[in-house]
Length: 256
Image (cartoon, rainbow, N blue to C red; front, side, top):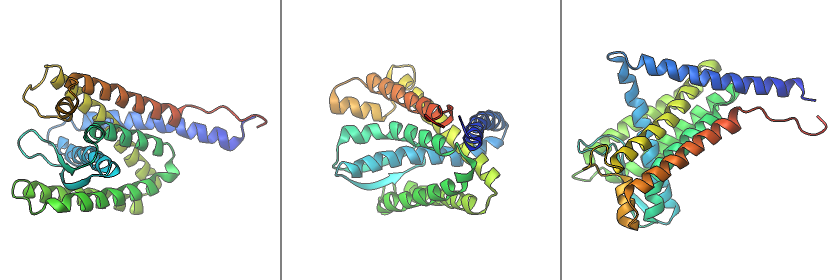
């Protein structure tokens, strides 16, 4: 038999998924209003930062070193760039889109309970800020990308500070709302970014666009379309799996 606390926990998790869906639908319509879509800039920068930090983390994990990172546009079609020396180029290139999907899926899982939202936001802000300091600082003296590095650091630390402040100061309910919006938008952005990559790779979008998939094609000889579709399938699977394990009711243990 399920205990009262178990039933309450399952009900709370189910409420969280409906709340997350509702908040993100509302957020979508709000940001379609003129000027209000400026709200998307910090969120877009945050998701771009997660993408680039995914590259950086894999670069370090495979024995390479990161010599710089940006998370703002350079006006040449690059939303952000990561500069890696050494490491496994195939894994590092794959870790951008897949890393963003993983972070979005992780936030979905972490957002299933209101009582942990404040701690999640605080830790997330601290880690995001630390990642910015470690990876962006080496690029400050670069003649070509130094300006983007300074802008990235400013925006990145502002986002990190806002997350830490939210975790420390906001009421638990409001912090939970914020985390659910962040989780939904990060996961959705990771999927739409991969879809855009697929359009480019199969010739629907801008043919001249540089992307991680074109890098992979150069490294492996396998067409960019194959990599973009593969990343799309894996990203979607991660998000669906995160929703399933986070919000599906769990069977009672034997003897309960």
